[in-house]
Amino acid sequence: MGANDLQQAITLHRPAKAAASKTEGPWSVEAIQTLLDKPLMDLLFEAQTVHRQHFPEGDIELATLLSVKTGGCPENCGYCPQSAEFDTGVKAQKLMEVDEVLRAAQAAKDAGATRFCMGAAWRAPKDRDVEKVAVLVEAVKGLGMQTCATLGMLEPHHAHQLKAAGLDYYNHNLDTAPEYYTDVVDTRTYQDRLDTLAHVRSAGISVCCGGIVGMGEAPVHRAGLIAQLANLNPYPESVPINSLVRVPGTPLADSDPVDPFDFVRMIAVARITMPTARVRLSAGRQQMGDAVQALCFMAGANSIFYGDKLLVTGNPDVEADTVLLRKLGLNARQVQEQPEGCAA
Image (cartoon, rainbow, N blue to C red; front, side, top):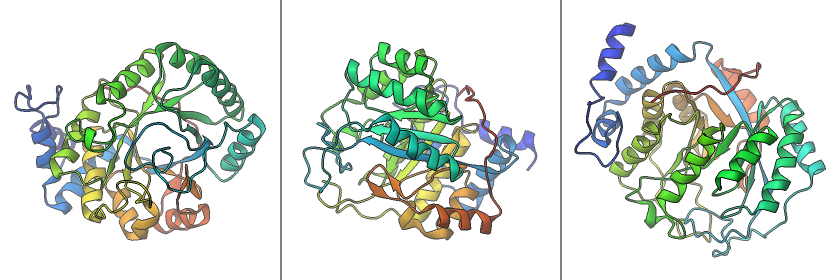
């Protein structure tokens, strides 16, 4: 299939008006569901073709995530072991000191990571919290790494303050489709999430935004999540796709495991609908095994969280990731690239 043929095929999935969809923009839920329902080999071929058009080098971005303030969050997200409402064994801790964070960031850089993300379990940080995180951002930026933070909901002035400190990316996931959102969390609204993303965009910070698969959602909710992400204008520069890590003590601990091929399909459709984004293979990699991860890379994933922990849950260790990438002939991205805007 040539480039023109591919573009024509993709255009067929983009109705001018998505009247039957609850999502405004070029991608209707129905069109995305059609993609998800394609024969797997056809879907992988289309996703890999799109991927190679935009990422011919075939590199993998390595990002490390550190919990700089753990536990005690007042939100009741059903998947999260850091919620104060659930007994998961996670103890609330204060914000880490600058020296501690810098040591972790330097170790991540030495291990090959180019982006360092700092997560704090707040519903919404206060002014004094943002002031302290801004110091962390400046310190990590001084190491020559891309910086990312996920701190909960932001006010406009907080976003501008973090931008001034040198923050490159802000992570704020939509988690799932709007119709299923209240089944997962009811201490905030979907619009709260969208408002924070708008504040981040207005401040000139690049957006890292994705969701979680395996929370009991129906296939239409998975399509709805991708539609929401793809129709953001512009769509996120980074799109983490997470497979639920079922943590004892959380309401979703007994959720049925995700079919591995369904997860691969989500990666592929994220790549097709957001062709220039870094699609990040995120939580749940420890349970996937090498073969499923390889299919995810074939489907267009080109970023992973790298290290032994994702906030407070397990993750494949650095050595195992290095061996896997070597086996697949994939290379870690070495040259730091500047965040680029992308149009939906």
